[in-house]
Length: 189
Image 1 (tube, one colour):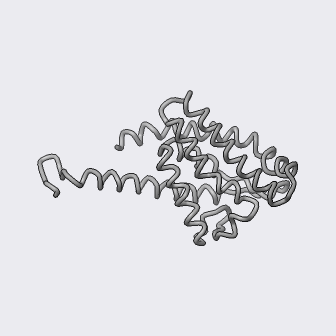
Image 2 (spheres, rainbow, N blue to C red):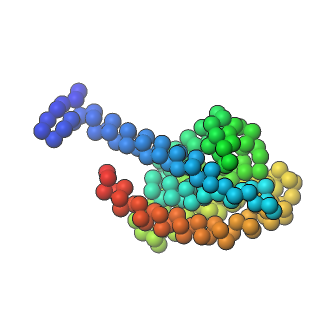
Image 3 (tube, helix red, strand yellow):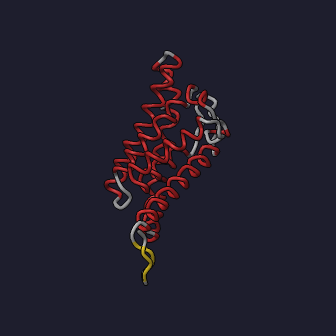
């Protein structure tokens, strides 16, 4: 039963507002992932384009925490799997998960969960979690490339090495964005 009082609605309304807020944050995270996928640069030496998706995964993880970040990235994958053009360069569909970027995509939910373990308040806990999340992304991506090409060396050389420097910068960018946005999100609660 809901009651109305001087300070607003009480009873069932509080959990509903909390649930709606969480759902909105997940939806915004999915939209951020979709936009970050479109900022893609084809790499001539790799079947995998460079995108801003790792920055988004790490930032979403740190800002939303492990559970909501996992939900956001699973939702993102589900939208892509049903054919919405949310994957890199406007692609969608289940078949995309079986292509060269499939391992990276499938690693995103786990990576977001790992990034979420570090929280968003302190750099000293956030940074190792983001590094761990990036390792998860690369492990998933390189493993899938090795399976597809039956060549672990090629997977390492084309799916990891060319992205290492850029992804170290992406970790720093994700940490900076998180430290900038986290206080604002906490204040909005």
